[in-house]
Structure formats: C-alpha cells, structure tokens
Length: 440
Image 1 (cartoon, one colour):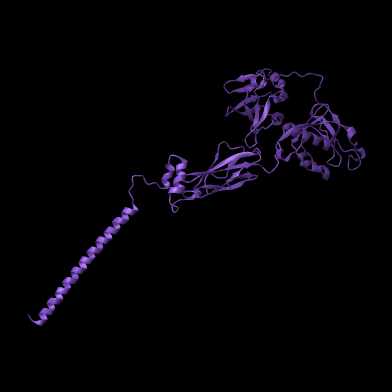
Image 2 (tube, rainbow, N blue to C red):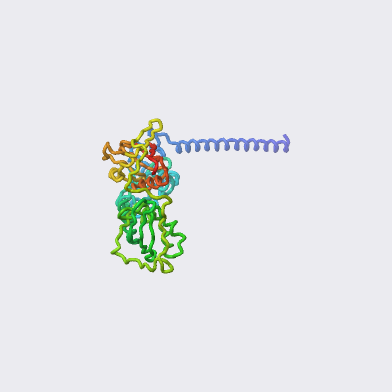
C-alpha cells in the first residue's frame, strides 16, 4: 500500500470516530434533559392524598374560620390577598360621609354596598356598587340612630362591615300644626289691619272700613271678593300699593268680624291657605283723620258697589225650589246632594275626625278619615270609609281641612255644581262624584 493511500485511510477512520463521538454525546444530552423535565414536572405538580386548596377555593370552606385559616396561614404570602375592609370602620357622623372599600379579592371598584337590617328614617346610600359610597341621612333621622353598612367583594367571596352612629348637626324643630299656622296668620292680620266699622247685609253690598298700618294708616274699604293683588296693584299711593304683595282675599263680611283668606306666614308652608278673622277693636288704635281721607282733603268717592237690582227683603223668606233630599245614582256612582243634606253638613264636625297624613319624607299625602268617626256621620253615609285618604278635590290637592274649605267655597262661588273627590282606600286610588244644588 502506498503512502498516500494509507494517509487517506487514516483520515477516514478519524472522521468515523469523531462522528460516532458526536452522536453519543448528543444522545447523552437528550437523556439528561428528559430526566430534568420529568423531575421538574413531578415537583411542580405534586400528588398527595389531600386535595390541594387554593385561595379561591377556600370561600367554599365549611366555616369562616377555615377560610381565614387558609388565607392567613396555609396560602403563600405571594398569592395571599389583603383582607377586605371598610374605611372608616366605625364612628359618629354629623353629616353625609364617604365610605371606602380596601383590599379583598378582585376589583374593589365592583364591591356591592348594602345597609344591614331596617334602615332608620332618612338613611340611604348614594350608590349600590363601587369602590366608595356616601352614607346619607337627613333631619328625619332620629338622633343617635345606629346603622351597619356592608361591602361585599365583587365575586361574593368575602365582606366587611362598618357600624356608625348618626347625629344630625342641625337642630330639628317639629313641624307646626295647621292650627298653629292659622293662629300665626290671624295674629299678623290683626296687627296689620284695624277694623273700624262693619256694614252687614247681603254680601253683594256688605263692606267694612279698615285702617292699614302697613300702608301708613291709610283707610281702606273691604268688600267680599276683594283680592289684594288685584285691588291695590294699580294704586297711585305708593304705601297702599305695597299691599299688593300680600296674597290676601276678603272672603265675607259677617255681623261682628271680617273673614280673610291667605297663605301661612311661615315661608316653608306658604302653599297652605287659612281663613282668619279680623275683629273690630277701635280703642286699641288711633282713629283716622277724616280730613286726610281724600287727597284734596275731602272724603273720597265711595267705593261701595251697589247691586243693579233691589236686594230682597231679608224679613221675607223666599221659597227654595231646589231638591231637598239627596239621590244616589249607582250607575255613575254619583251623589246629588239635596238642600237639607247640603245645608246640614258640618265641616267643623268632620274636622274632628280627620287628620293630615304624611309620607316618609314629611310631605303631606292628604286627609285621612279617622277610625273614631261615627257610623251615622254624613261622610260615612255618603260612601266614605274609615281609613280613606282624601287627596284632591276637582284636581286640586288637599293637605288640610282649610284646603277643603277653600276649594269647595271658591269652586261653589264660581258656579261649580260638581265636585270630584279623589281618594285612596287600602292603597287603591278611587274617585267619587258629588253634585250640589246650584247657588242661589
């Protein structure tokens, strides 16, 4: 064998040895990697006789104590969430306060907020869900009320509570009664006006001479139906013109007093109107100077409006041809009141068996017929029942017996012959229709 051939053979042998060594080394490396992966898989997924417990699964534990144990002891701090809490957790509040949820599982912005138990009057939450809510209460909330608010995690896995005492910082005054508002208005009317003389007779010509302290002791002539806003709005006397700001009306001129109707003097109850009396008391005030009654120093022209026809003789009783007995129409559920029934209805007697009822916010709902009303009372006889709440007459809301008197009187004087009474009976709304004799 020649030298070149021997050298080539040696090189080929070397290549075969190197290739075999490389293959053996690669195979050995693969076995090592496979063993490593198997060991890692066994370590990462250990198999034990006890079921593996995760934080999310502990909510299904038998008791809250188990849940707390897994969270605080067994679960790794890396996977352990913060405990859900409400801030502030307690305290005494005098005004609306913000409550915030912290920690817990998942997104705290999806917490559900609820008031535990029955909420005291006027207490509510500004929202049902969220990271925070406002605890709201009002003057209607009894002082010293306690309320517990609960925040529940978005996935209902846990909850936290806070208990608070509520004391409204402002002084809560009891609402005045209608009688107190009426007395306040009557006192004011008798301070503002002095009745000097009454001219009693048919309301078409009855009048009263009155001094107004508000108008610089100006002398006024009151007559039934006079409305301050209309009568004095165009007065040339600036002092008298100030009277137009009062929503007062002269209802009638009686034998010994004047009846006026006006709103309550309390700004909170200016929508309530009452009838009040102005009685003559000339000794308590300075009498008017006759020489100043007119701008020229002379007595001004009389404003008494005389009727177009001669008034009937009051001593001669005119026969009333209107029906005397009341009639009920079952088809239309309508009462047509006769004169005997209409004249004998005693509103003051009804007022003793009626009371104003309010909703939870303190707003008047209407007038409720008392359970103490006698069965022979005209209201019961005409279809009313104990517990009924009268809410409106001819579409006008009523919140007191004064409202009833005012609406009925005004409507009747304007020629209304049919009154639709809206009421509520056992929570069910209803209406009744009453027809009255035509005004003579």
